[in-house]
Length: 263
Image (cartoon, rainbow, N blue to C red; front, side):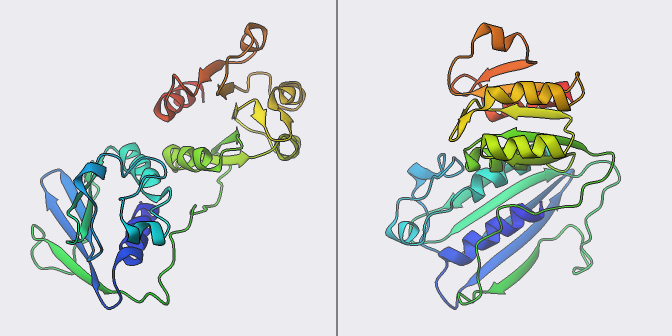
């Protein structure tokens, strides 16, 4: 969730004019908490509202093109929020700024510290002065230490954007690592035990399927292997792995469900 806030605040600062403000609001209504980030930027046309959370999507304005768009930040933020059982959305009109907001359920005994206000049911508003000299893009990944009991996943994939989204979706329950070449993946497999491995055969330096024998030699025989591929896989190969998923027919969410069922 820290990464979500970092992504949204970074985008708000990046697209707001110098000297303007970014407003953060927190509202608790029954079992839900709503957090919104509002900026004074150029706004986003309504036709792009449904697309803005997709990979590489951006509002079609000269300002967004000039500043490089929102990258993967919004797609990753959506994956994290939905992983926590929430929803993320947008309210915006061209020339009138944008407000990104997300809802999260308040579960069990979890409480939100609203000590800055005397009325827990009211909206807490904070204002941030924009300083474009120090505003930076949100970090791609917030690292965390690995605990001994934490399950490890290795994703062998040369698409860094897909790896980034999967890492965000997996969240804090599992330790996620990626390798973008067969050579790098082989090094990781020889040096570290993993509880599950995902691989795409089509790597820039060779066929990742050759790693199946390495995995068999170095890992526990029961270590699950998922092939997540852009092309059809031979039936003989499919028979020796746990799952074969085609990217054209299965979403990242489908892959996540398979991971949770195997680990």
